[in-house]
Length: 477
Figure: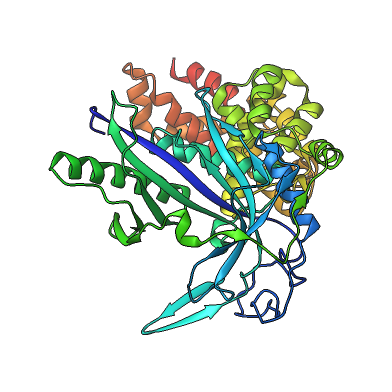
């Protein structure tokens, strides 16, 4: 980044609410591959139909807003936002404009900075265009599904901050049970507004909106490219045009899509078929009691209560299911082994989740008994089994549901520490590896590591490495 310029970034995030039905009709709110399956006269905008507001969508929207520290407006109004596009069956979208559901929240960053929120409002989604060759098809399954739009102030100062903001927002929404936030299914979509301005100026530059950002990594890369493009354009005497640009993932560039519309272009006016939305204080307080401890709050508590480093606390609180699982393991182990529990979960258990493509948002989705991992950690700490054996036992225990102690007993995996049992294997390894033996005797003490490894291989990981080291040192002098 050119040191004479600073980026100014604001994000608009659409989150699909996890209701059973759509926002204004009873069609299922679910992702399906078959086009135009979950539709009815209301969500396809047939003449004479009337919308009826989904109470659960309001409930989840209020919970989301409270999780993000917003003030809920007791009085908000739905509006018609007019634009003409093939996937918008009514030629307008029911949204909220000048009187939104919630305002003035924030999302904290690890640096201590807070990214302020302008507003959170309810709206219905449009359909989806599918382009194949020279033909285009319209799928209205998504039309009418309930969304909240979360709009930030232009407080974000780098692509890296934008990525962290989005990760925190996603975690908060999943913690609160508001949405599955699955970007592949369109449950979370991001548009970015970015401009550049001289570092010593408070005046904002001309903003450009970026679309087609289908991952947090894409958001980061698109912002990096666009910031560089705008700086180079200005320094070469050009002018930034207010427009919407698409991120081209394959080329790694942004491309012009259309000139940006202003609010008046949408001809907003109050939705005549829906009354104002009245949210009473008693309802707000009831929903407030449902908001769980949020990831950034849990992260700070984990650092204080379990003496974890910042990295461990951040990884463990990314998913609510993992955080809950960790605390159950520590309850079984005791806080003196809280770092051991963290290590096993972050390395071995997270590796299993990655292999099985699991995002554990609840204890059920973790799919493993916390008491089993606690049992396994104790067996390794007490020397009953080696760490390498422990890793294979964990995988088998996870896949079969058997306890670690049962697997160790059935397969005779207990660690061998008896010198007489190890003596013969050590002598075999010394005889089979004259070069490492000579290296060790000539002063290359690291060579003993290779010899220990050979003994462990012959013993299938069951040998006590400390006892093996002592026997080797006795024979090698």
